[in-house]
Image (cartoon, rainbow, N blue to C red; front, top):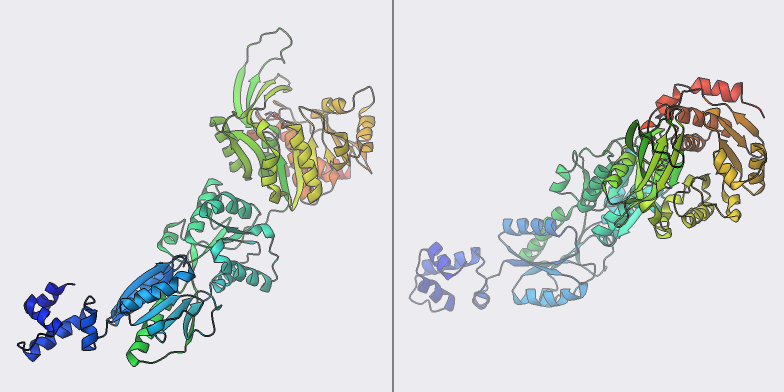
Length: 639
Ligand code: RIB
């Protein structure tokens, strides 16, 4: 608005307006003068402060000083602006990075002739000429009692409300991921968890210093802890959670309920809509602006404190939690390979060339197979391993993901290709394997340490030796510290240090591997006995189609095989170990667990490849009664 606009609106010339403004208005009629003044007043024609002062006109301007870090700043500006305009006032907004800058901005606002101020601060600010015309805005109840007018809401209340909503839907395992400067949300979360007598594991909460930090570390940490719901501190965090869920092919809300603090348009379009706790920034500033203007008009000093409450904005991201997985957590540390399976009439010997009947390429690797095995049988499984950043790596990653394996512990190495296994399978289904470790070699102590949180309440760790032996040894020690029982498959072996054998709960070699560990002519029972003497708690020797042998403190016992016709025995032991771990993790005894494992591996070897051949729970449960009858009630084999 300039002098020409005023002249146009008043229907007079620019020089008439100028004369009125400058008091040289003797020759101007009273009515014209009044009309010009009225328009100046209505339009808040600010550059003419002196004139206005002289005429006793008010600026009709209020100031808003906001911290740039205030997460509700857009809504606060919007609310204050709307109300100011409704009441015929203008709003000047200034942002500060630090509380200390506010005083200087206040001075500037006084110079701009603002009549009153809305200030985002928990401390009383010396207001000079505007001392009695300040209303404070706040996100907590922590403010200087000497402040006079305070309009506030509590961010912690939003955290509390979010948890209450999830608890009402039946959730107990609730994560909370926030930015560092939103700590109050976490206070509210903790309070609500406590009030509902809910345990709150350390790894369920994350305070990130940037959204990248949250995406990289916070989300994998919190969401791999088998939580059923998550409180996201902001819309951006909710976006990252959705992205993560999409990548891991898990569904909101069926597998994870989500609620976000702070509402916005983005939440309407994410998934089927994300439920939010709407913060009252807009209402609060609208009310505060109205109150400030009222103070100015009535020339009143105010001493008022007004509290605003966050409200729920229901969408479609909260449902009852999914049924809990029955068993405890199982970690797999091992190899991930792409298997090239070559069907031959018999395994080639020195100097021989053979023509292959068929060649297949399947995802494999002992670690990968075991993880997929557990996932298919309904266990809670977390993989730690290393892949190459190549096509094989991508295919292996997908195969594990599709089978419900948590993949936060898997890294892609930029230099080495993914591991490969070249497998000859003969007509009887027997196999011989050559492994190229590739990226599996890159599994490091740093990577294991990055996944330490996974071990905290893990029941079992499945370990195989196609990874560097120092990593296997480090993992054994870490498991010991966390009371996680190690189930070790001593394949491709490098031997394990003797002093660590006592920290292995289950040692599962095949007969050849047993001979490597205990060479000589002794019987299988004797060799298993020797390993027990070295400190291993339970030795299970797998014997292919002939079943297995168990030796522990109480039992020395053979288990028969299933009698199923094998076509490809590759990965039979991986299938056995994953099924054993799943049953043990559900609290079954060793005999029942071995029975279940024999059938799972018996089924797997009737199919080609490993990961596609591993049975799901239904396929094994068909034999439930038979398993019970054979191994628990009747022919348990010889003791
Ligand atoms: O146990 C079978 C596995 O051993 C194969 O999948 C192959 O990759 C090797 O690691």
